[in-house]
Length: 505
Image (tube, rainbow, N blue to C red):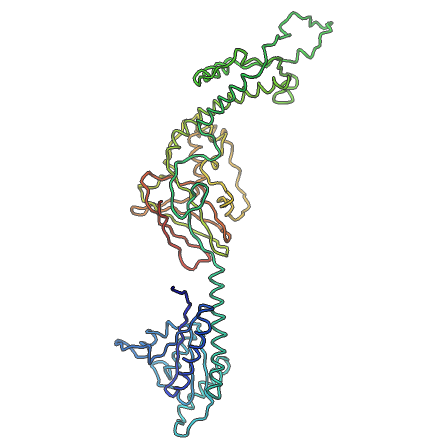
């Protein structure tokens, strides 16, 4: 079974007099890999010019070596004894150049100077001076060690690479662990899925036309069950109301409550259309009166028994519900046959991310701009903009699985003047249709661009917590013929752009 092991390339850089130490380096690396490759999934791969370079033309030898494998190494080990090495174009030796290149790249260099005895025949005063000068030059930088024997070198080298690579491996592991991991998913049946699914548009938590009609029929039947009858209006009888009369003057402040003729006509016609039988006393409210004096203090001060009050308010609710059905039916007819998708940004990582820019790539035939959505008549547009929430219609409300879009916004003190009421806007010459479309603009917080045969939908998200999902601001309407959607995410704490594809199920 394949294993995921992090491998670090270690450059071995030594002049030609270093031989036994190279064997020790391989021995120590083998020991390290045996001990840690299985348990910690870390290994070291030694690289030396004698085994890892190849014949290549077209450049200086040292430059070719640098390009072939030195530039790709993660660390280096350099050892000096009696020789400093052959000079290159820019340095006194190839080993010096390799050390400097590694240090310039911010990489680790394990540098050692051998203090083992030197056979007299191997002493070259010029080379030995270069080694000592180089050693003196790096003394203040604190990056070298001295060893006196092979055993001493083996112990020091093993200790150094173990400390460095285990800490490096741990740092990379923590860096990988403590990172955001962003992905876009689709909402389907109140669940998050990696597949993209288009649904018929509907408004969550709003009754359909059929459900509203069912509620209307139930309300008709409920009202018919009240046992109230037409009352006699005492104010129309022959009563002495002269100043000397003992008649209770409070009667003059009372007016009988009735259902006006226009409402009765509408409710009767709807009942007939729905084939609902209503009783002869359906509109009778018994002795229900309105206190005219109390009305000066309150909107309405209805006086009557519990059943009289309940029947009156049920009839008013029935009238309102019938009106709403006619208003909603127009919206439902035009919008409930449209297809839409709901998307969320998910952070599956363990760190917060910020300043996230999302781009979705649609084919022109697929995306329906919200500005091209069906127009409503003034009657329905007035109902939608004044009595309902545009966000509740087109927006994506939070659930236990994801937050709403506003939850991702950084809090900014709002100095904007509040939006005036719709009727004020109408007074200034704006129709309810226009106000409806303006309200949709406020919910669809996207930017749209055309590029070739694509429409690019852009969205900015301020931040997202770890292990969290944030819904897009609204649904996106799509055509019947759907295709996969490519997306790209650029964020503050991801080094590279994230590119992926949402595949339609």
